Image (cartoon, rainbow, N blue to C red; front, side, top):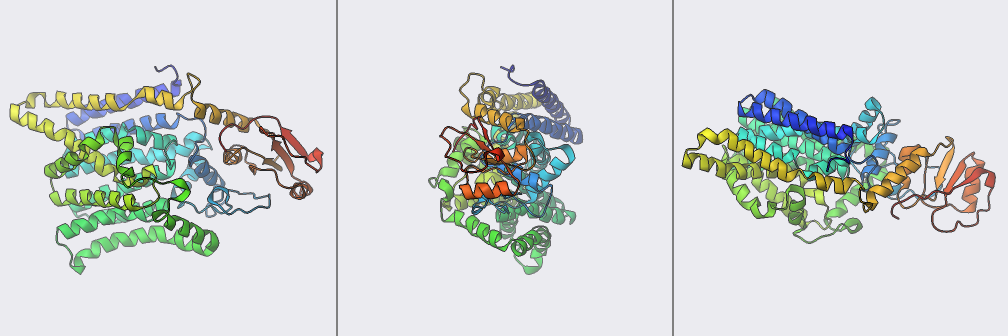
Length: 515
């Protein structure tokens, strides 16, 4: 079953497994610092394994993120899709824009920095996701311990690390890949910071709450304020509604504003038309099923099976009850549960539906599921006086979780083409090989690239690319400006080109994929 994986991948799996087992051993002996060190290292290794699964840019939307981040190496404050828009056409959609404000820029800056430090590749594209979600494992452990105990924290971290959905986000397979990975990471860190503050009252956590929430806004806009919803509900439950009791929220919110607001001002001043169009486009998601992203009101509840496991819908309600019942602070856990309910109601009401819209609830759900697993175990220990086998039974539960959730066969079936039926892998691998093999002059332009694969073409070649053949007058203008035109033949017969054929080359190779 492991023969399809490369030596690097097998090595990462082995390192991840050894570090996870070491972390578990330290956890059982209550060596928390060592346990967390090896747990985060295990996560980094296993997430790196996921990042190496696809040696090509994935569709929707990894290829767009990769190209914009690569272009930002040259101009960090000007996110562009077409860095060199040589063909005269309407650059009027997010998938063919010049200035690309379709997403907030922080996760793109992170990728650009990774490209700058470690070179441009598919792995370095995914490296910021690996780092951020590895740190999130620490945050989930600490959150679980603060809310319930260390056992629940470790179980929640195990569920997170072994989640196929999280691995697919890192690998670039899930919509919206690196964007949602960064968003999830910052939301998780903001919730953890809030819990640390509520349990310690140390003022430094106020800065971190604001910092991580502001970073989340700079990844995916106003849902990044999710931590303040949790905090506000907690204050209502605690009857802390006097004005002087809101100063701490105000302090954190001020930090979030300092982090997130400058880009909003800059982008609207520098690129007013593009910024206004994207603001209107994003706002329309609540009332319109943009680009066919539609679904029933229970869509996000069905997606829980994909994100958390096929059995989750059966246990989520008792899990939330167990989480509340077993928590140290009932108001904190209830605030998290009510915020989760609000999250699902809000996105269920929205017309546009996408799988990861509710992903910010993941740290709460993983912790609740961990509490639901630990709660009956602890009752058995107490009822039958099984304290002597407590550690061994905990190890058994952890091993069962990992064995049932890490499905290497599904990973192989999804990311490899061993039996010749994985058309997706075959076509995108072929395209990458084609684009990287082109050795063309710097003044070249690629034309007639199939579908939206002009995005990958621009990433791999560094040349402007288009999915059509311009009119003869435009071809002649390009040639007059010193451009060498390379036209992919595709399946259809090429139209008659009445231009200087010395400047035009037909590439008689197929770009695979979809229109």
